Length: 345
Image (cartoon, rainbow, N blue to C red; front, side):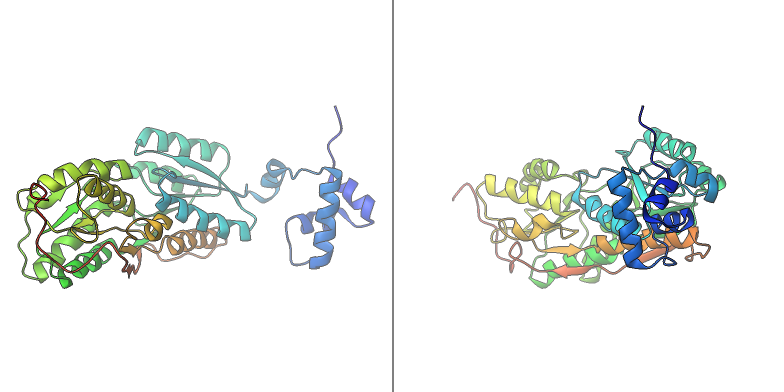
């Protein structure tokens, strides 16, 4: 078998010390930028592979961060992940990703594996039902944890997420301002802090406008585009005949609009629909979706920065750090008008 390229091989080829080579490959500012680039080019040419295991023995750091979320196929988490990756890249950390799909067992296995690999820390959107002990397992073994998107009772760790209650109240108030009074809420679950807070924002906005909160106007459950599409049947069958819908996220909203259109109504004209998250699909859907930007990029960036700060010895204050959402008004909402009777259309 071919012999592995060593630091000394690179050093000899360039006439530099192995200490300089090591510092350059770790992006140390002690080595001039042009020299660092020259060393990296030579390392690539010689086929040098950084030995992370050996480095971790020297520094007690592996440079590995774990990230575990519900499902990265949801673009909401994809945008958070992209921001985390960008921030970690700046400090030459790599990350290992896991989707837990709300399986506590799968999440626990990932944390245990990360500990076995000597992970430096973990950023997680905890699975529904995560016991406090699972978070403490990481912390007590020297692997600090940062939470994103969801909060957990009994855990006082830095947690970064959008202000969901305020964000949904923005969407609901927008519809109220357009004259809508029978407004349904589609999607979400009370099993997560996100679901509870978004529903509370909807309720608070209705009450502040002196509109009765009718529990029958809530259709919980959907969190995907398919779920929103299927919910259209129940939505259009509601006795109160809502003229608007606040959706738990953009995926549900786009699915609902497709279901409404399939039934012969025009979303944005006959029925107003709002989403949440301001995903890329929101601005290019037909009609373009009125939604709320939950600042996912800020959530990911701040969470990654907080973890890196903890690893460096400083400590972001524990507790909840809320990022203010912003309204994005597009074509899927319009002033109230009586709902068309499909039977007469």
